[in-house]
Image: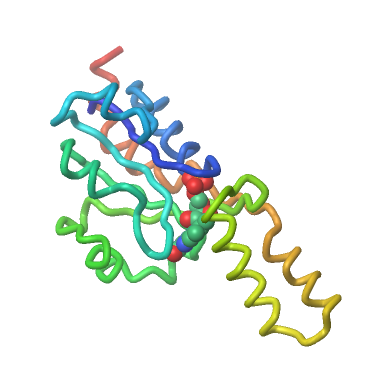
Length: 170
Ligand SMILES: Cc1cc2nc3c(=O)[nH]c(=O)nc-3n(C[C@H](O)[C@H](O)[C@H](O)COP(=O)(O)O)c2cc1C
């Protein structure tokens, strides 16, 4: 394995990618820099956030590199994810390569269009849940509270799968 590429806005996907890169002693590469750093056809693991059901940037990564594992990082409970449907939406043929893990929410760190979309979604949710203005405000604050659901155990199976490779590199 040559590298772990991460595509992350607020750091949760980067955290997972970093755990893998450290354990396997391979390079950690930002999606934004990948074409400058990695040769086409490199063997990679891709870790990226999920937005509106889509795995950020995976099309470009799949076209350029030999992607062995895709780790999609989202806020939804993994139990709610239909992996067949998730793979179909993202046009991923080999479902065995695709994994979903929980990231987190850092509303304060979000910027631009992403922050705007979250703001609209949470405002609407608060609006529908109660008529009282003060309660709506409280609900919005609750929805935008920092949450970190990352857990190294979620990606340990990937580390274990490629560990033999890493041991040979010692
Ligand atoms: C605009 C937007 C859309 C999102 N859509 C989804 C989604 O469809 N499913 C999901 O599970 N999480 C969704 N999320 C939550 C992010 O995937 C989650 O916060 C993730 O941990 C962010 O990872 P990052 O810090 O690496 O960017 C969305 C977040 C934003 C900002």
